[in-house]
Each structure stands twice: as structure tokens, then as C-alpha cells.
Image (cartoon, rainbow, N blue to C red; front, side):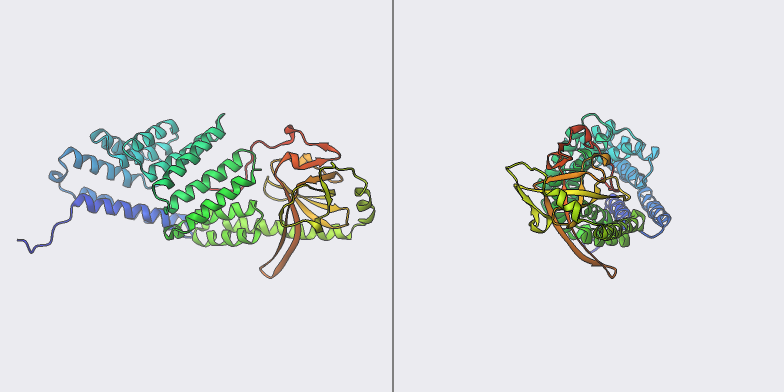
Length: 417
């Protein structure tokens, strides 16, 4: 009868159940990770029961069988560990219907988990050949970065990752996940090229900020964590602290609370070491710095005369008083005294720790200056600092630094690529 409700396609119901399962995976982050596994197991069992309840006569056609195999493989592959059973079902799906792009995408993700990266990339490439797709482009971008680890052509692969991420954005400029992926690609480029390129950090931050405009990304704790990590290396300490706290609330498993504590430890060390420095007899140190000859194309300056940001055609002469030890490999932090007896913090990126030592005389060219002033948990942090990103920006004991003193790769904070 025409008045009877139309029966929903059982494969469509199973598709919705599979999508809901992945939404749960991507948005549910309980304090105990085992609770997530248990909940995923429960919902995957329900989705499989729903799928298997479809009568065999309703999955006779090759297209129906392909969709059935794809959904079964997708549901089985929701967990982080590799599943041979999931791979078998997904392989059947693409054999039955080679034009099923989503099945190729899922098969690539499954094979990735067992470590066969070249086969995974082949699956993603085949999926993309079925037509432009932002999810596939994002997965290709992620895989490029994974393959780049330990590869001889790291920079080429990371650049390929960036281009795939940009291609995804071009398909949907409002998609937060594509912007998030681009932010990860730029940050990976920053790390793999020696952790010194300030521009890569700024590009990463801009991409993350665009990702945040998409309300769907509010449930992604990795976005908060990674954005906070970029703020940390941009030395926006207050924003880094608030970002890591937000990430910790959304997913305790990210260890963001430890990042908060490490930043606080660093800031406390900076505060203490500046206190020790000011207690030293600085007059003779400062007087010796006024006799240092600098390049005539630069104007001699002191920390108090610098403007926020880059100070072009300015040279500042200082003495290294202390090296500040902290938990991360990059950057290196030093307490410096200038010719005006003012102490400040020098942060140096992309250089080996032994390139600058306590007691060294340094000339900082075109210094990038910032004034940090904020309170956290009732304690005030206030200090002046100069950031050095390039070898050419610093002269140590009258000598330019050599390329051998640069760090070509850097392992820094935990980051979800």
C-alpha cells in the first residue's frame, strides 16, 4: 500500500552504523584508554551484527557484495592494531568493485598498520584515481610524512605532503580536517629540516587557526595539542600552556599535562637564572663588550633599544652567563648580559648545544626580539628575549658559525602527524 513507510536499505543502515563507529573513535577520549577500546568493541559488534543480519538475497549482486565486504572490513579495522580479517574483506571489496574509492582508502589504511607503506600508498593512489577526494588526499599527505621518516629524500616527500594537503583544501576550503593536516605537514617540515625555519612555524599556526574555524574540529584533541606545540616553539608560552591544558581535558592520554609542567619548569628556570645573573658583578663584563668591533653596516644596539619582532641592520653584543638545561632538545636557552648590564634570554634553534658555551662573547645580527609578560597559576613571568633561527645571525668569539655546527634533524615534542 502507498501509505506504508518505505523500508530503509539495509546496506544504508549498516553504512550509517559504520560511520557512527568511526565518529566514536575520533571523538571519544575517556581518562582510561581501555574504556575506549571496550566501547569500540561493543559498537563494532553491534555494527557487525546489523551487517550480518542482511538477508543473503539482498547482497547477491556484485555491487551489493562489494559494499558488504567493504563495510565489514571497515568495521573490523576501526581499532589501532592491524587486522588480517579486515584486510581480507577489503581486498574482496576492491576485487568485486575496483571503482569503490572508499574501499581502496580503507584498504590502504589497513595495510599501513602492518607497515607496508608502499602498498598503502598504491591503494591511496588508486582511490584518488576514481576522482578528487579530500579524505584520500589527506591520507596521502599523512603517509608521505610517515614515509619521509628515515628516507634520504625527506624534504621532497614532506613537500609532496604539503601539496597533497593543499589539494584537499582546494576541494573544500572550510574543511577543518584538511587545514589541520596542512598544519601538521608544515610542522613536520619544520622538524625534519632542523627545527629552525620560523616561517614554517607561522604557516603551521595559520593552518591550525583555519582548522579551528570548523566547529567539527572542537572534538579533535590533537588539534589543540599540536597548535599548542607550535605556540611553544614560537615562544608564545601563555597560549601554549592554555592549549596544552585544553588538550589534556579532551584526551588525558596525550600527556599534555606533562607538556604544561615542562613549560612551567622552563619558565621557573629562566626566572631563577635571570635572578642569579642580576646578582653577578656585571659592570666589568658590560665594559668589555663596548670595545667589540662590529660590522660597519650594522647599528650597535642593546636589548632595551630593540623593537618587538625583527630588528634589521642592528647588532647586539653580549656575554653568555649561563646555559639553561631543560627537557627538550630544541631550542637551546642562554642567559646573556649586554653592554648596558641588562640580562636577557637567548633562544637558539637549529644549532648543536656545544656551538655556544658559558663565557662566550656573542654578536647577534638582526635580532628577533620579544618581551614576555604574563601570569600563570598566580606566578608572574616577565623577561626579554632574542630568538636566533639562522647560523648567519650569530657570531661567537669573533668567528662565524660553521654549517657543521647546525642540527640537520631534530626530535622535539610529541606531535600527531
